[in-house]
Amino acid sequence: MENDNANTGAMTNLNSTHSDTSNQIEIWLLDDDDIVRSTTAQWLRLSDYVVKEFQEAQELLNHYKIGRSCIIVSDIRMTPIDGLTLMNHCLEKEPELPFILITGHGDVDTAVNALRDGAFDFLEKPFDPNRLIETVEKAIQLRKVQLQHANQTQYLGDLHGLEEVIIGQQEQIVRVRQQIHTFANMDTHVIVYGKTGCGKELVARALHDCSPRNTKPFVAINCAAIPAELFESELFGHEAGAFTSANKKRVGKLEYASGGTLFLDEIESMPLAMQIKLLRVLQENQLERIGSNTTIKIDLRVVAAAKNDLQTLEDFRQDLFFRLNVSQIHLPDLRNRGSDIPLLFEHFCRMAVKERGGDFRSLSPIDHETLTLYGWPGNVRELRNVALRYALEPNTSVAKILAGYQAQDNIDTITPLPLSVKVQEFERSLIEASIRQHKGNIQSVLEQLQLPRRTLNQKMQKYGLNRVDYLD
Image (tube, rainbow, N blue to C red; front, side, top):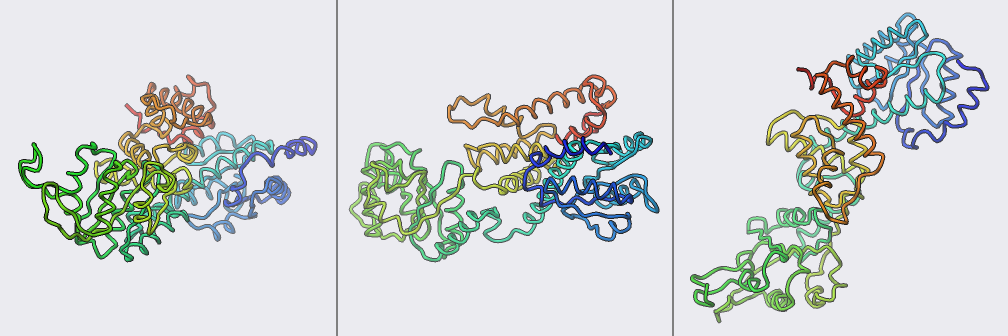
């Protein structure tokens, strides 16, 4: 170890080198030298990490189970079980487990070979505490992604009922599912609020499918997509000869949806004259087709969707608002859904692989970071499109896909990628280009990029790059 003054100076910078959430992952520290082990553990604990100390490898193995929230930091030279034997035993059970080796100068070649066998990294004695913290933090971030992926896979495999339709574990989405169950059986009109791409029609369909009306039609209309002059005919239908182009009788959407559910998307775009006529239909539960004097009884439930509060809009009739506003469901923006973002991304990736073939691949730490940092102005719809591209293009990344979308889009309101993501994507593209150029020859890549093997190994792991994908 370095002298006490150097260690003291190094420790003053440790507290700011990692996020508070690192406490969720334990560091299992194994060393048969009591002084070295306790000193290393102290450095880690001063930086608010949770450390579990082990003196012998067998003791650690007795506690270890696949999927534990831990990384392992182990000395190489120990008896009766050395660090390499322990690593091989653990990685045989769980190949993705981040395993960091501590080695003396004479064991560096052994440690380098261990990197090829699956070690995450190695630290050469005496090591700088900041180097220890940096390596541990990278391993912890990787472990978080691994465990989250495992939890997501289990969650997605256990889905049933409404959870298969409205996917998510965040409190806001759990509340939406509860509201759907409640409102579906109340048989009242509902307003669903949410930005474009949040899944308003999905919620409307779920309300219909969970209700006693599910054997009757679900009819969806986008009010913004219908020309004003065709709106009345679209909703009310018409008799043959009612106007010049009316060659035959047509049943309108209101009549066709009778007994079932009418979904009016972007209802704030409905012309004022049609708002008045719709209000009358909802009050009297009857209508007349254009060109007819015959009254038709209807039994209708309306689910209306809007991006903004209808009560505050000048061009939306307050009496129609109060008629519709029996129940409300508010859908959160995707960027506010936290851990649901990678969960939904994995769901869409698995759907794409199932429908179009190919192999499912897990997110790399940088892809995971990009998903959570990006603002998702297109919400779930945008996420689904990115997931489809990611699933069908094996050598791309989330940041690369998003950058490509933005280059083609002139919308001023688009959310830019964070600088840290752009920098990492640039680095990833350089490494990938070199691996492709040299057809997976790592030695040539090392020489071209002038990187130590350990550094290249870490970066390839971080960016989800595998040399076998580039072999000639």
